[in-house]
Length: 154
Image 1 (cartoon, one colour):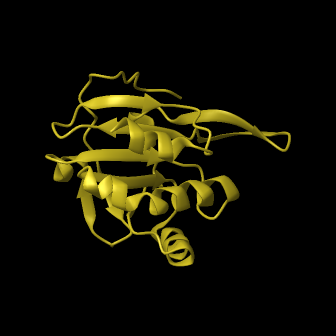
Image 2 (cartoon, helix red, strand yellow; image 1 turned 135 degrees about the vertical axis):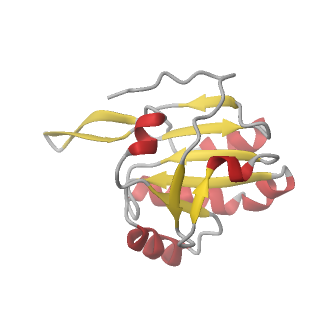
Image 3 (cartoon, rainbow, N blue to C red; image 1 turned 90 degrees about the vertical axis):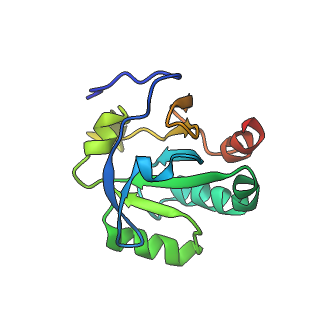
């Protein structure tokens, strides 16, 4: 499934997706800021909810470092709206229902859930600098401590 082999030091692939604010967003809209682009499997699941709350809890630290948080999953905008509302999330979630950006960033993997095989998002985080260059890639992310480590590494 991995169409692209992204590496640190490469230009982050450009994309356009609809956001939770009902507007189209391009990655290039965020040039001159650092971007934490995080891919997560599903709204309102335990680990994804914890990760989102961790980003919320550190939002001031990210803001002080001129860093924008953007979450991407294959969920619909309607699903994102419920997720944002439930946890009062102060950052943008983008909907990639067609899996275009997931494929660009190589985050779709075969998963085995409850004995069923399927394709899902492997929890991944990309740190992108002010010039649109990927500075860090974290794949197979474990939620506990991840966001705190990101803040410290910026």
